[in-house]
Structure formats: structure tokens, C-alpha cells
View 1 (spheres, rainbow, N blue to C red):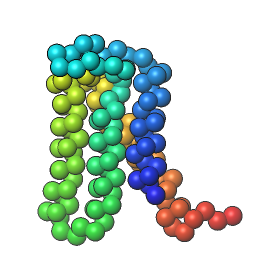
View 2: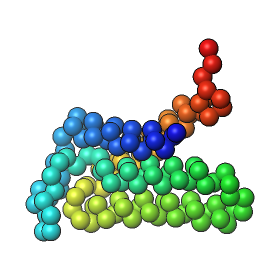
View 3: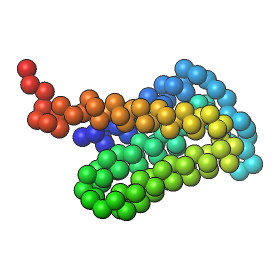
View 4: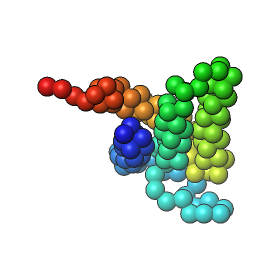
Length: 126
């Protein structure tokens, strides 16, 4: 349930932030592609943060060995970092766009986990 809400909801939140901020991209016309849309915050980076963060939340409770937990955490952080770095290297985003997307993704995911806890514990009862 959280995966269904967290990733699409975070992406929608990111689109609203883009419309509110209206920050132009570093390069309007890149050497390989035309970057349309606004820059702040990076959609690819928030998507990676939400997806890999959500996958970590599914896998970590099952992993008992510390080395496996470390490997999965390191891998998720590395993948998010690579996505963010690639967006800056391609000229699609400023570094602050990427850092904000990671921060927004972590906050949104934490909010989804906290608000989803009553649902996982048997639903909201009145």
C-alpha cells in the first residue's frame, strides 16, 4: 500500500513544487536533447529516492546479517547518488535541484511510513 501511495504521490508533489518555483534549467537546449519543463526539484532524483527508499523499507526487516543490511543501504544510496549526479552532469539540473529532491523524497517517504502505520496495524478504528 505504501509503495502505491509513496512513489506516485511524491512525484505529484514534485510536479507541484516545479510549478510553484518556476526555476529554469541550466541549459535550455542541451547538446543532445531539448530540456523542457522546470528544473527545481529533480523528478528523476526524487523518483529514485522514493523507489529505492521504499525497496529498502521492504527488504531491511527481512535481512538479519549486518553485512547484507549494509550492502543494501549502500547500494540504495549509491543508486540515488548516481541518478542525481547524472542529472547534474547532463546539464538538466543544478546541484541544489538534486539535493532538494533527495530531501523532499526522504521527508515524503517518512511521512508515508508514519501515516501508513495505523493502516498496517489493522486499519483505523473509530
